[in-house]
Every structure is written in structure tokens, then in C-alpha cells.
Length: 142
Image 1 (cartoon, rainbow, N blue to C red):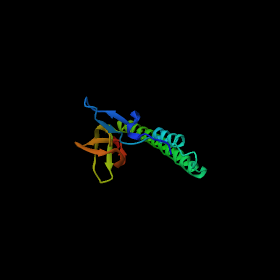
Image 2 (image 1 turned 180 degrees about the vertical axis):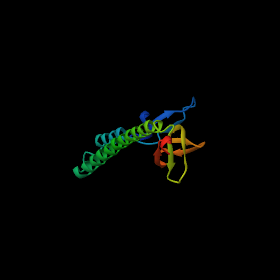
Image 3 (image 1 turned 90 degrees about the vertical axis):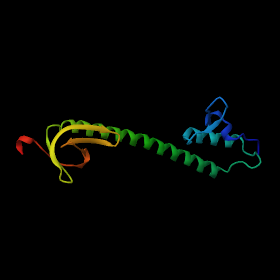
Image 4 (image 1 turned 45 degrees about the vertical axis):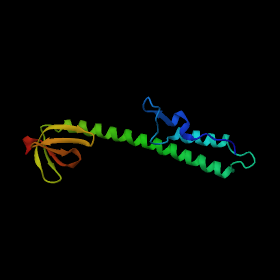
């Protein structure tokens, strides 16, 4: 088999941290890194003992799976952002309404807070998660 340089000597997998040229590896490999590894493996394989077609197909299937999982993760992140946006729009419309939470807390919504963990309503000086609302009433009808 031909000479293969160590993967961590490739500049795409390393970065310089300080002027003393210390190097640290990336925390995770992505789909482009996987494809580069596959191409390097094909270029440097032993001509007398080449990779079997079943091994190559299995590696391509792994690459395809990795790409699909990556795409699904991006779509899920976008969905969650949209969901939080819709919850915040709905929460704004609850200001001035009387709500009841699933644990029985009742009161008039005086404000909302949007945090990384979700949307919260301010009721009686307490934060109640938007997802914990059981009932919404118009205060005049109470």
C-alpha cells in the first residue's frame, strides 16, 4: 500500500491556536470530511489488492445515510425555530387575558418572555411556560 499522510496533518482538520504553532483537531467530522477520507482511501489503495465492490458500496451507503441525517437535523432545527416563533406570536395575543395553567395557576397575563428554552407568560409575577396553558378566558367574561 502506498504512503498515506496522517489525517491530522491536513490543514482542513487542524487550526493554529497561538504563535507557538500548537495545533488542535476539529471536534467533529462532517460529511465533506467523510467524502475526502473515502477519496483518499480509493487513491491510495493497494493495486494488487483493491477495495472490494461490496466494501465500496457499504461506504457509499454510510455516506448517504450521514448526508440524510445531516439534512434531517437541519430541517428539524428550522421546524423548531418556526414553532417557537408561532408560540411567541400566540403568546402576545394572550396579554390581558385570564389563563389557567395545567397546575391550576390562574391570573391575567401581564407580559411574555422569549428564551432559548421556550416562550413564557408572566402571570401574577411568575413565569408560566406557554406549553403549560390549559385554559384562556377573556377577563370580562370571567
